[in-house]
Image 1 (spheres, rainbow, N blue to C red):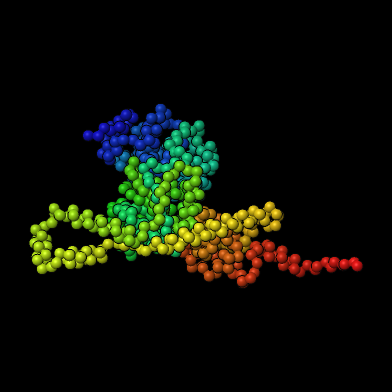
Image 2: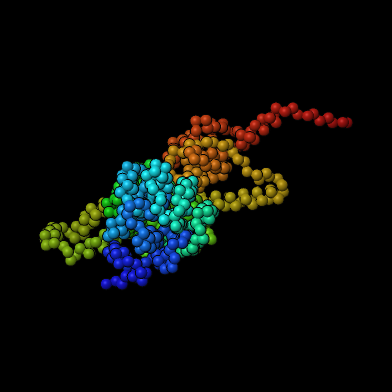
Length: 581
């Protein structure tokens, strides 16, 4: 029997039995660090990567105190997403089952009346998202008088999602708490400011090395053709042959498009995005956990906190918004000491940008070209051959007799060829993409060479004072946001460039507001704007009704301010210069 290392930490026998029954015998690093603390009544800041066992790390010492008896809320745990809050609630539920502790989760998209009933019954462990938790506080249904501990899980992500005001309002409402524990993978300035205001002399634990990767995760980057990205993803999926994987896309429309394509190709796939009801999201996650589907195509709503056991692969389709997004997505695999693969699928231009993104980090990745149809076919044929030979000892007598009968009536070569021809119809071949990728790579090399020449020419002109290098701000266009997913400058830039088919230089500036975005567009982008509204809508952006119309060919590429200035200059009478003889 495996030795239970949790016995080293003076945990109560009921807790030891419960976690051993769940199969936990070896604490993770973050669990060891917290269980080893002499004083757990102090405020804590804990930096730990996703999938490191944080939930058990903060629940075990709290449950061990016997200070969580039912009757009123004692512990409040705040999380950025509904899925993570519900997952923590499930962990607390099984951990406190022997002692009949009551728990509840306060999340949006679920029946609020049931949450109120749970609170009235005396739930002592309360998990929730900031928005719904604050709603209960305002209603008076969540009583805070007996709350002694507040835990902020994924603190950086809660601030990323714009929950700062809600968090401050909640913390201000629970001023008599004994301790606050903050768990965060990163420590941006906003997190530091929040901790300085609400935590008193916190003890700091860090298990994160800046720029380091999960040691259990292998990273691969596949380059696919620009115009056949989805087909490239199909080839990568066929090659990797994942029995349980998450595919991350940027938008709701893209997740549905990719999921439909994969279903048509014979994959057991479904989608997960922010416009789905909580019931639909729970159903999709349950299907992946149970194995009814093997691939879940998701937006960033699933990038943090979700713990789906046995995820072999994470596939990131398209350039991640930033290094943090890349890291948190990849953290959905390789969890709790298991091995996993993180695979990024990029076109040649995105590959170049991603190399720059990884520069200076300790992340090691294998760079590969998308496998072609003939490579996929050869690999799958080999797998079928292995299946044939493995069946040798388990072939029934009836099949053996049928085989003998066929051999008596047919030439062996003709017989085997006929059977393989039937088998070939069940072998997935993928797409012929080699020529497309080679053409894209050649174009990328050509553009890179031309860009270097232009930069050299620009430097020479700048040295001669012959060129104005100040960048025009373009014509500002207002876009309404039609997609509920999280927006940032990287996503806006990618959406505009992909929809309009323009270079990033055609986007001069980006200003993100709550429900709309202002974007400075240069002439080529502005000219294409009115022709590509449908594509923009697919990405979750809709130009406002008073957006500028496309300019006619031959107009200048200056901003509206510059155009007005030039118009005024044309109206101004020129001074006459006399030439004296």
